[in-house]
Structure formats: C-alpha cells, structure tokens
Image (cartoon, rainbow, N blue to C red):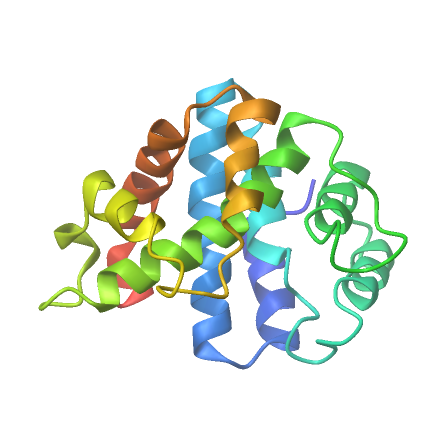
Length: 185
C-alpha cells in the first residue's frame, strides 16, 4: 500500500498551486470520514481523495487521464486508480461511471468541498468554524452562489450512498473543520 507521505510527496511534485493542494487535502479529509462512516479502509479512501486531482494543474484539458497514467506508473492500488477515473465521470468521454461506495463518495464529495469553502469565505471571519449545515443548505438553493458547483453531483449521496444530503454535508463539514488549520480556514 502507498503511504500518505509517499502520496503527498508525489502530489507536491506534480501540483504547485497552494489552493489546489488545499482542495486535495479537503477531499482527503472527507474521504477519510466517509470511510469511517462505511467501516472501510480509511487509508485507501483518504489517499484516493488526496491524489484525485494529481494532474489537474498540468493537464486541465485531459484530467484525469494523465493522472491515471501517473498512478499506474507509481503502482497505486487499482481501487484508487478506478476511483480517480470515476470521479470525473460525465465530464470526459470514456470515463467510467462510479460503481461502488468509494467511487461514489469521491464523485459526490469532490464538488461539496468547494461549496463548503465558498460558504466559509463569505463569513465575516472566513473560518470553517463559523459554517454550519443550515448555512450551507441556505446557500444551496442560491444557484448564483458558487455557480460552478455541480449540486446534482453532490446529491448522488442519497441515491448511491444512502446518506441524506444534510448528513452528507455534516460529515463533510466536520471533516474539513478538523483540518481547518491546514486549509487556512
């Protein structure tokens, strides 16, 4: 199994943007929490979250195709590679639809982390501690707020994972609040 340290070193060698790195840390934290929720391998799930956008900075037009190649070369577990491929389903032709809880979790939480960050940034203190589920749900219906966030992708948490949206938001928010220092929020 790939260690977090090795995955982090690889990520940093391919991604220089501090904000993209923070996004990856947020998704990693949420994936760890979802693995605990489902009683799955939290190391496997969290590493999938950490490296899911490994190629985005260098190859935004073909992401995650190049990332998949990198992960195969580095001999990452097939479960991680499959999750990285499936997280971009619907964006690029030929990528597989998520087929298990790990893949649906990554697909659904990837967009949600961006919405949570946006909610924090409009708070007076710009801190995650000032955000709660109700404030996220209030912004949810405002389609002009964080307009780039694909809300229907997040809503898959209900059908595909059996987690009601408010609970999915709560799990994700708490995970991100747990690493608020690393996120600068």
